[in-house]
Image (cartoon, rainbow, N blue to C red; front, side, top):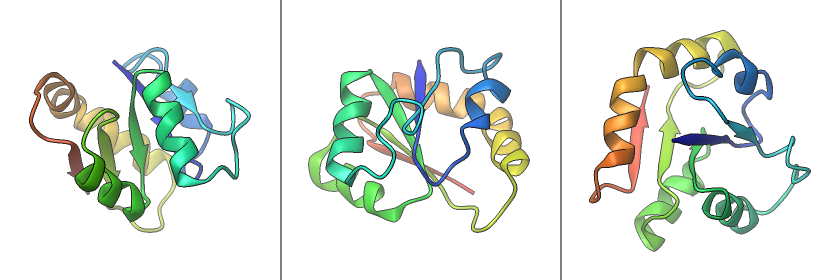
Length: 110
């Protein structure tokens, strides 16, 4: 299971979470910074990733379009990158279960 971090999240998450979520990607590291939501959605599909975002628009897309990709929607508000990493580490098992199941298209964490 790989994660694709949206532009609102730090690229540092790729390295800081590599031990828990190896092979993670970040939209800017793929050269797609500033891309429209539809392009980000497509990149997550192409790279077979769960899309991790703080953007409510992707929650709506997951409801309208279904999966793939599945969306991990972070409801943290303004916070440090360390707070995001801590939440994802604490909820790693929940994220893995979410990825494995076939019904839900988004997972809300906060």
